[in-house]
Image (tube, rainbow, N blue to C red; front, side):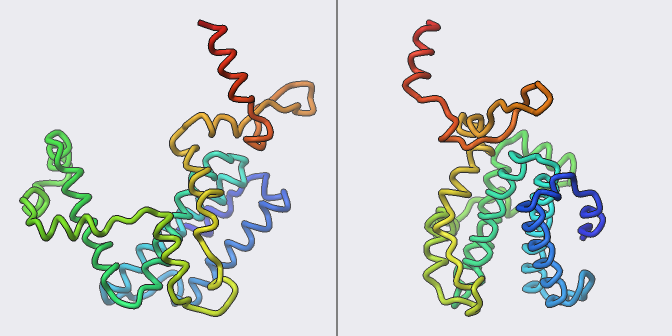
Length: 241
């Protein structure tokens, strides 16, 4: 994991108290995780350990990306990654709180469904085989009705998953275990999805600000507080026709 090297290159916004506090808290959390997991380098001798390690590796990489972007004032990039990190947190803790293995089986089945969907396109299959070799037979063979049903049952809307996750037994009575995730869906996932989708809401997060040097610069603002009234936008649009 390249954490220490990456963190040597954080940007000037680390001096901002909120950014500094969040970076220090997040870094301490990951350090504690590695201590409890047995260090950065350890022997993984079964598929179950590898499954969790891969999930945590991706999570830590995304966390590093958020901290790096925030430290350099790349706010929109940090927002987009934070939206993804929220989904990862929901999905991971949803699986971790399960009382049996059924949801884990559905999660694993999605790989079959996703691979088949991606390779349905002839040009995609040709590109894959040109780069990595012949596709396994299971990617292109027809699924039974039962297999298709199992793959479909593995899909769950992220908000529904968050609500169900919150209702499951906690893994710890510490404050972090009591934290609910569904209540953050609108403020993090839904709002910051605008950045990922590049819709007009993401544009309204930006405005012109006095830079202190007599020049204007683009910076973040409160989207609703600084946005133009939609009825005014309509008037302007018709006046241009």
